[in-house]
Amino acid sequence: MTRLATLLAGQLAPAVTGGGAGGAQSDRDGLEAVELAIRAAMLHLGGSLLEQLLAADRGHRGPNVGCGCGHEAGFVAYRAKTIHTVLGPLALRRAWYHCPACRHGHAPRDAQLGVAGTSATPGLRRMIDRAGAAAPFAPAGRLLSDLAGLHVNAKRVQRTAEADGQDAAAMIEARAAAIRARTLIPLPPAPLPDILYTAVDGTGVPMTSTETQDRPAKTARPGLPDDGRARTREVKLACLFTQSTLDDKGRPVRDPDSSSYLASFAPAPDFAPLVEAEARRRGSEHIRQLVVLGDGAAWIWNLATKILPAATQIVDIYHAREHLHALAGTLAFIVTDPQQWLQERLDELDAGNIEAIIAAAREYDLVGVKATDRDKALHYFQTNTVRMRYAHYRQLGLFIGSGTVEAGCKAVIGQRLKLSGMRWTRPGATGILTLRAQQASNQWDDIWTPRHNQTPTLDLAPSGT
Image 1 (cartoon, rainbow, N blue to C red):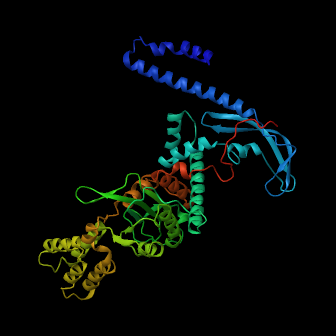
Image 2: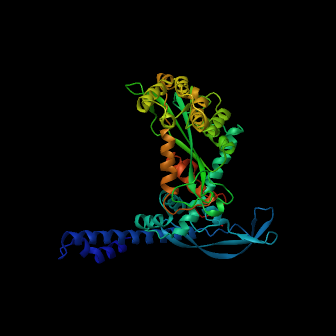
Image 3: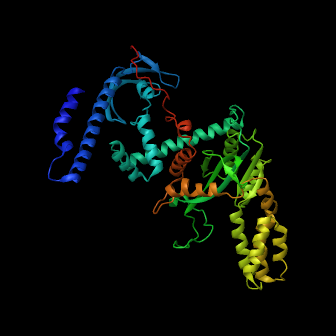
């Protein structure tokens, strides 16, 4: 270490001490060069130390080991493998075993270190996953190079992040099944919050043509050919958060850092069990008040009724106002003062007097297409009347807007998966969605695990064999 420091000091002293003709800018450039050179040297030194440490146990576990299929694999030789670490690539020589019955080989040391079936260590995979979840794959690789001095190409970022995200999604599904089967019983949160909200929404993600084959488009989209073929698939997003207090004006306050997210391409019947398990994990069986927020879509209320039948269902007031504006537009041709009519209806909406809105719209004797358009617009209010008692909900100190999940659709999904030119496969998008939902939920360390074919613990001590 002393020799390395002396060597670096001798080579880089002119850049650090300055005094050249380039002035301040030259000094800054020189300092940056020194910093990067020292980082590269320290990574090289650390890699050498780690390589020596790993070489202390070459993974020999006797002449025979179990192959995992009930047979015995015999020792063949020590074989080399390059593994990629947070300190750079390292050479690893480890014992290789082969099973004549299964006709495949394996190295026990690989599984012990978490590199079975892959060349990246768990530590490097976590870094790649963070970068791949945050940015498109090529920029993510550049981030790793700039910030950590690691050279990881876009394809490796993609493969690693998508695969680890898919593993995390499978683990979330397994955990949900265990919670619902009562084989895993989450402890109630402490302190126990007063209210648990479940806000649910959906948004489209651009997919490859094979993923949307034979799927009709819901509506024609501007700028795209109107060939009737879908180009997106819907991701369902649930945001669960809690509330324990009101502000000095009696308005609800979301508990800090209480939001957790679930994102899935699954149809509503398959998405419901995941949301139910997450609600239980968040304490739904212990919390006094449960609330489900949605934009009025029937699948959301069907889901809520199935998994949280005791919850209060509330239509997001901003969606309700949008529908009211559309209703006013439908009747504008016959209403004497459309603006005044709309304002009166908005006041009734804020009061939760949906019956008055319906009655006011039916005062006009319409026939044909106009009557059909009016009735379609009113259907939204008729089916959601009890979910729009906004004055009552305000008195109870409840949120009446689903802004958390709306923001989640933009931040968790849109800002990563809906950028210009992106087209996803369902498995790949699922992986990245899961990583982003984990990160937004502050559950990265709770849920992230090494891949299923690796052991979660790392023992660098020599085994003595």
